[in-house]
Length: 495
Image (tube, rainbow, N blue to C red):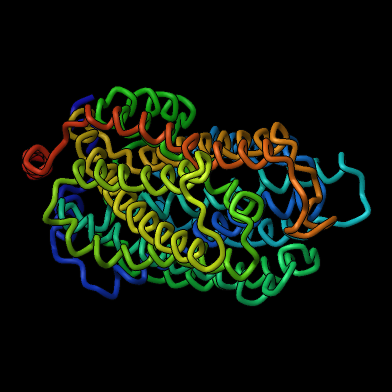
């Protein structure tokens, strides 16, 4: 389809006005307001990832396999529907714009589901718990996507500048990590503190409610800020009829872009690795490293502090560096932090115990968080650049589908990671309800501990290594992106 055909019935002045707005500098306040919307995803996702599998298996007594299956099923169902959400929001027209109606609908549904998933009833059968967990997992993931996919796509429309996009991504990531850290501090600092704090079943529901309030406040700030920035959005140029055909055509179209295919494939591998490591995090800290609740809090908080501190640091340096190189270097550092401590422990070269071990794990976690921040900021900014390349190649704006594709990769891979983690727990022989039965001092076979450490550390890192190899094929750099923007500006000016 030609560019002339895609812009029919759209006033040229409207297209030029929004283009000019996206080239104007974006002030600090709108960046902060937009970034606060990341609370919805990071508070719920990290609350569920850090505490969820432990709560379902060690506290509620759900077996590892069924628990991992329920969590992964929610992600997979959601991932399948993500392209539909992205496509519909790309083509939506309303006085609130393309994205805000979906954000307003998804927010309350997500918060309700998050509270309910941490409020599973006691005294019911394992089958009932599994069904409830499955349904709530699907509801939570779908409603978060209903908010988050349009929110992410909106970020790609705030500016067209190659370097400025990294700054927007840095603010979104940084404030998202504030939300993620808040979820961890709310848990360890208030509801799960003290000896055996993670085993207190009654603490999980108020924990989830508090997290939901924090996420809602951030979302409302972002909705207000996004409404103020609606003049920067791309003008809708497509007919909304025949949405199914448009969806299928759009999905096929984005996979014709080589840059997107590489980013998508690498994301699947990387997110799968993170899904395994994060889902097993509490189990590894408790049963592999033999840490108590206060030490686990220090290690977990250090990781999220690295994520948080990394945002302003990376935001300052990212515009000066090639995004691909920054991504590759940061992922390699992250792989080292995941692999070295557990591997050294497994082969008997790390015999530290007590405070020295905790200090080492705290430093390692902080470095890993910093590296993950750099990788995430680079990848998000690269995805927005690839969306510009898509318009250049095919004549359509597909930010919603691009971020839906990235979200699809994240959720399928993270779901696969959660399933792998659950199966690892089953295979390792870790008993269900271990924390509730004997606390963190439960006696485990050496083979169980070894399997847990192997999967948590070097096993997960192998997936990330494969993603690094794939990213070596990526070619869209700063100069290529500048040429694309110049061509797009000429097309829009010509009408």
